[in-house]
Amino acid sequence: MSHLAKTIGEQIRHYRTLRGWTQEQLAEVLESQGTYIGRVERGEQNIQLQTLEKIADALHINVYALFSERDPFEHLKQDEWIWQSVMLLKEQNVQDQERAFRVLREMLKH
Image (tube, rainbow, N blue to C red; front, side):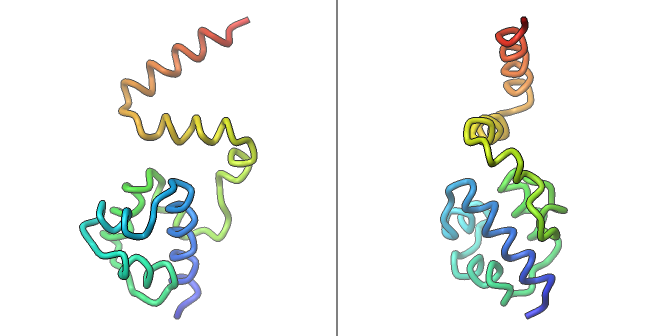
């Protein structure tokens, strides 16, 4: 098992669990099997770049986040309400994200 495969697998597991998904739920989105996701997360399975891109899209993250041992969102996750708000917005389409931002900006104007 290579260090890179292990890092990628750990990051996939990290972001999958942040979304509250099981391996089977991620596999369903990818039209794959949970056992495959398990092998990838343990760094036991080689993975194609196209599959990495699909995983990143499914998890609503940038594919580059899967290559880093650091969590770029750690500071946001320390505040549960901010993190939940970010994840809720991430699940919306762009128009709804923009609408929510405008509402929030108006609500918080002083």
